[in-house]
Amino acid sequence: MTTELPVSGRAAPATDPAGVRGAVRQVPAYPFTPIDVPHKLDQNENAYDFPADLKRLATERMLARPWNRYPDLHAETLADRIAAFENWDPAGVVLTPGSNVLIKLLTELGGIGQTVLTVSPTFSVYTLEAQMLGATLVQVPLNPDFSLPVEGLRAALRDNPPGVLYITQPHAPTGFVDPEAAVRELVEAAEGWVVVLDEAYHQYSGTDFRDLVQAGTNRLSLRTFSKAWGLAGIRLGYALTSPLLAGHLRKLVPAFNIGTLAEAALEVALEHPGYVRERAQEVRRERERILAALQDHPLWTVLPSQANFYLIRTPDAEAAYRHLLAHGIVVRRQDRLPLLEGCLRVAVGTPAENDALIAAARAFR
Image (cartoon, rainbow, N blue to C red):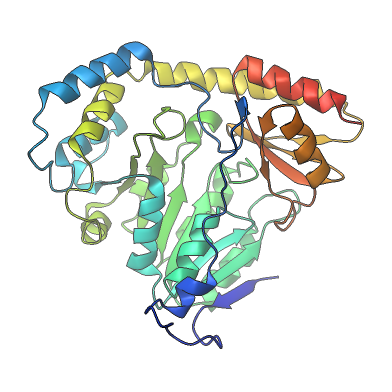
């Protein structure tokens, strides 16, 4: 079943006394409340900080640069370095402070007055931005096994005015990875749409859709330094796309939006990418260890994942969440989302954090 949510036409007045648009007032704030506990496994973060020696090198580079001068207009120097790392045309690299910003700009680019098409459940920022910016939001439910509903999405592509199509691999919040043939079929069917392949977690799954993106001018790979690179505090996301689409997208990017200090840190990271591969390999090992350790749990079911997080299905998500919190572990409830009844989302932590999670799970009765 396809759900279609047009923001326009609702009963609320267009503005309030403060001048805020009705669409903005009706959308809830981003659903996150920080909780201070010993084991933070609720935001899909890298469990490890940027390596200390690289942090020192980045700091030295920051101190050597003038802070009184504006940075590059569109971070061209850093874009060149990312292009070299990704083997991509620099004219097709677009940078913003986090991939969330790119999602907002992509909705402005192709969604306003048009369609944002994705699945359900999905990453909440897709839907929040669509609703706030007045796009028609169309969501097609995932299949029961969390795979892409290829036929349902193809029908939605045919039945709705073009706009933006979001395909996430690995998928969030399930961690599912679809066969390449299914992704390719949808991308090739989306002629006239802006097609976004969100690959925020691709280092953990070993998937890479750059070749598919390069095959069309309307396609874009969304990537981030926040996850496998361990630089969520620096805030940098980027798009790999065609020079044509990048040129239009760049019109929406605020000038000087990547600061000199962030640029220095990211340059150092790109010069020393080996740590990313090592940590991604550890996440994969730890993820499989957790799944194996909890596969015989009498009440909880750990669902397979190809990302740096996984879902635990429980009979009572509230009770399970409170139990883990009492053991100093914070996770993310997902039980209000379609198909995810009773589910908690848990990030893969350090071995010690994962041991604590396993022990707390086994203590639940």
